[in-house]
Image (cartoon, rainbow, N blue to C red; front, side, top):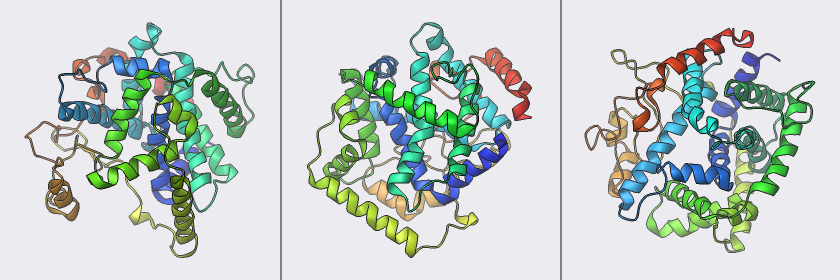
Length: 366
């Protein structure tokens, strides 16, 4: 199976077959990384999640949502843009540049990079098995493995920790099995409770529950704690949910599976979930995003966003709408070479150009 074939299969799974499960599982994959103290300490030290005591909640949430929006922009372009395309290569080069100084100084460990990659490839598979109406086929799992293995190589993630690294792997499934075994062992020895874990978990919870009415937030929080599971919840210092929530979750999952399997038709192509807008703005070459979680970062105001039913609900709850507060949420869009913390805008052009040339030279991306 070629990389382009693997990409096409994964894109179909994410856009048409299991869009809700895939997008949710990637968010929870990132959430799980917060349970490793070596990862959470670095993230908290950047100041993009945690806030000083004199910061108000709005400032803290805006900073957290900007960090989440930038992560989403880079990850979505890496995963959903065709390998070898300008968008895919620029997002990888930008990610490598933003990580470079931390990796040189040992603040980002090779094991932490591999663990994060393992969650991104394995969590969608685990979530599909648990929560969807069917399991992934071996061909689909192999395609995802081939795609993510190549992506990891482009991000300079080492596979030396895996037993078959010296001689290589027979296929994507062999690599996937070794990665899964290593991931479990790494989580067992590295996922421990810490204050930094709890800070990140609190910030992420606030974002995930932002759109819920106040009266429903305790229910949503307990359901999220149930989805996370006891081991990760302990590392993140989350409270144990009441036992009834396990039964509630099982019922909701069973009901959804039944409806999808027996009462709903396959999702047609024109109703696929589009994660990327196809074209940039003609005069600025900036891209906008179509979906946002808390604040409309990089969202160009449209009639639907400002006057549609969802817009009225957001307005009634005091939520942010595209175009409000002037340019606070950057409605002009983003350039991939500028995504990241404000102090990094305009930096790294030389390094990113060199990385892009290296990516272009790889024959598997030709």
